[in-house]
Length: 387
Picture 1 (tube, rainbow, N blue to C red):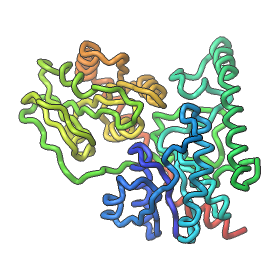
Picture 2 (cartoon, one colour; picture 1 turned 60 degrees about the vertical axis):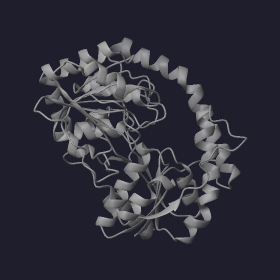
Picture 3 (cartoon, helix red, strand yellow; picture 1 turned 90 degrees about the vertical axis):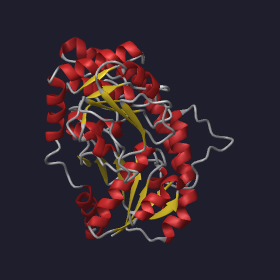
């Protein structure tokens, strides 16, 4: 199967896309990844064909402060920019990241079936949940249900505005107003981070996290046998600034070791009980007793999949929602605002109370039985061919 996988260059979206491409390769399929040049070399080394995802740069008329415009208008533009190269590769299927909706639009314009990849829980609005992003658990009882109804009313206007923006963007590139949606939705998260909803889409399936390491390098561990704290500042532009320095200050004198995992330049100088730099996080998690990081899905899912509890320091975007879900599941503590005292207290509590590790291991065990994303994609293609 020739499949195009379309995802933006942000690590939280590019990494799961690369992981999915590797799954396709293992199954004997022929994937081509459309993303930013930053990950070209690593993808090529893994045997994945790559193409530049054009249309990412903001245009003078774009309003990036408007989330709906940023997603839908940019999606229409991206679909036009990638259409020639996408069409030339004659894909039989397109997988489009949920935030890179242009991939789905381009597939529709080419009359090619497409599948949506959500590298996090399902964030579609639900008639049975509080608004996504609030961080709230679904209300219980009459008062709880009334609360959620009122909150959904507050956000309904924004939802309708987004729908109108999508309709206008579709019409602008010659597509019908009504969006038929993807043939399937791949929800790449742990069941422990999902919430029950009465309107779960029939086309959506939980496939478990799609994890990929951007390096083969192994970060040297600090000497000794004290508990290891893995510190991983958020890679998202909405992440909390200064996390590494603050966390190292918080851990001073607590009797732990620290490994700071970073894509960017690590802090200097480092105490003797800490190391920092780019290294495989899956290797570090084999030794870690607790993780301190942003509430981004990539690190949270990777940590819980390894059975390691997390102290989350959420920034913007969906990090608040995810951090609160992990807290309710029992595998995490949430720190906001970021202070030395709050981080120190949270880390020592997680280290001192076994229940956090038990909950993290329970989350990992819940991955058994996750659906196979490659099998889902083949099923979609077989269904199209049958008709």
